[in-house]
Length: 516
Image (cartoon, rainbow, N blue to C red; front, side, top):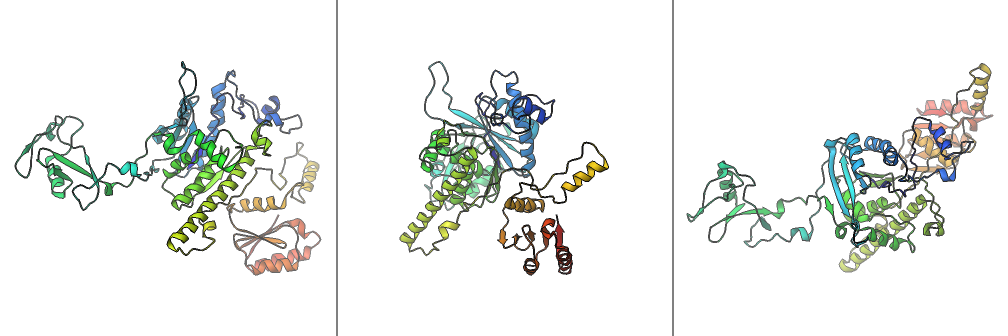
């Protein structure tokens, strides 16, 4: 599932909205002041408001959204679904854009969320209490998961006649439209004639007779009408409605209250309530799925995923993406020491995770006290995974080949000299480990074991030798029986014999060996 809460294009959003596309990105960034003449990003160029006075006000926002939505569709699984929060400013344009990218046939719903219950505004202006959540699937493989039924949903069901099939409620037996073939009399067991309604019965005569035999249709006491039974036991859940009320999924005020429970002074002023995100996630059947949010803000999605995993025993994972948007220096967030929104998100995940672990621990202790419940003291810490890793998008740790402007033998020779050691000047060892991990096709969450002189990735699937090398390190690595070993060529400088012997030893052991 993907959930995003993008800028609503209200005229106050701090976000880049390029308005000319016939030039290169580099030219554009210099022209509007995003980069200086040396090519460095300027502070004021990172985020720029899309003013309503701009003649391309709507198209700028759509051009920002379009490539992201194309990529979102590519990332979704075939049975995946995307939810997008939006308000009245762009909901009509977003719907058209989603129709183009995802297809009109994959439109699922336009959910109206009651985000506020407090009246506001003046007497001659509508008090706006709603936002939209557009829902599209990638293909027809997505099936909406039914919601769990609540006591409120089931209050109409009872069992006055002690039916062995359990609680039931009466259902309509009339046909919605006139059908002459469904106009017929029903004879009760005592011989009473029950006349049809004006449009006829809901089923054919043969079907009603079968339902009478099975007990699904019964007669009232004086046998003047028939009663259809709808059994609670036959209902798997409740179909989700397209209007979500604040009392069920929370309001913006509830979202701020959640932040106040985590932070003394909430550092973010436009969060979504976790219950709102939880309800979207509940509409996806896979409890082990991946939830992506690439406008993550204060990380409500991460909080919702962890909370829902606690509530229903799921093992969902999340991926959040947030641009390094600077906090206003006058804001509470900046005063509290948060320079960017991403820093707020990280701290919220830490605090929410801690709160969830404490809740689980209290629940376990309560069970121990009430039921003499024997449980591992660490159970509260392991039931829900609240750990996370943070990555920043950065340049490669290895030099990137650049074609010489003047393609001559001398220019090529100079370029080749630069690549005798391919490691970039500002390379960081940990970053290099993760870059090589990614280039080897490994998951970012695989186990990484740091040893003296080498790293083991995903058990013994891959070994990295990046800092130093000697015979002892090679011996230790071989004793781990790795499938593949990658080493930096520069650590073998002045050790040609060791490099040759290492290559032969790896070959004899059936290990793929590569130097870079």
